Length: 203
Image (tube, rainbow, N blue to C red):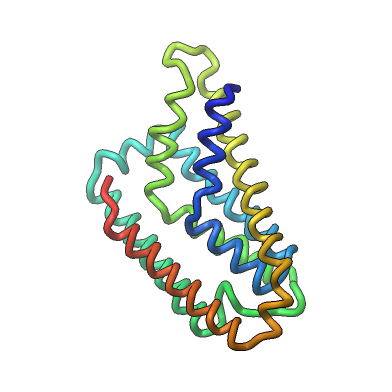
């Protein structure tokens, strides 16, 4: 596997986006364990896009305006829902002292939805992976699966790193109600901004 693929993937993964934002929120509100769970969920959310790229479904999003718009606005609606829940202290920045198994499941489901409802990620896989696989390569499918696995692993490691860093600051945040309120409004505004960016995006 070429160094060019690894460097390009790393640049994409470390770029701030919805997954990074969600993982940071999990670390700040519920600690390191929750941030790792969120990072795992974000990595799982890549699987549908990987499958779409490999099976050619991403081509439908790229060529069909209707399919792209439907998925795009579902993503926008979900980001706005995340912002609303954050402001109401029931979402990503709800501070909890204990982490129940059901809560972990909810974190993973939310993280998966954040990545699944992002048509740009499917198109990214559709345009990105083929650049590193020769058309006549006999094991092209397995090569794409291998690179997708590496991309998912990088996503988990980097996102978990973001979240653990945020968790290290947790005590300084949750002990200060004003700071927590400011953080909550900031995260809600960031979700709205990402939703607006997605709404204005083109294929």
